[in-house]
Image (cartoon, rainbow, N blue to C red):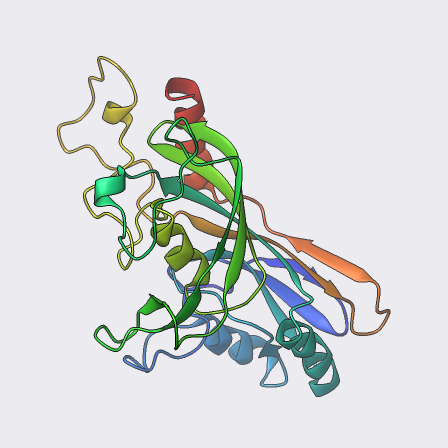
Length: 258
């Protein structure tokens, strides 16, 4: 696989536009699986280090440092929770009876997601399912907060802006699933029966019998990241364009389901 596109770069940092499906670092279950940092180190050397992580199936901004000084300054902002993170997600608004039962599904008076809502549930590793996270009630888990804003409603789907205030593994995905609106195509926390098909949107659809979903990847994208620059200390925002597959899905939702 070629190195992903560079979004922004100077003498202290380099930011990549990570595609969905590419690991950040070697997988603990499969050490030989291709990963972004392996590609980066092969081209730029081991002085470049990733400042944070993204799930393998999430696309978008991945920030790397070019020196130990820059790494310490940037990673310190993640640890102190001063980084601005914006994700975009296409979610499935499930009937309450099909939603995760850990907390009550988040719904407005009309049965849709409210325009804005916050999920504040502690998260920790799921002992029964290694590699997955779960919500903890009472004791256990780590404090986790995500703010959500609905950008567009499409009936059983919604386009949502997500702003995690903490940085737990799978945080956005678990919080959305707990709200009863998992990310589309989330194999861990979503509804495997729900697919975004043109035949499900367009009346009188006359397409192929072996129709493929408009979006087959996890519909979660790390859209923008704001940090203080290692040298100037000024705010620096790095943005990633919406991947083509998500653009296509949104185009048809806006045309037939808005």
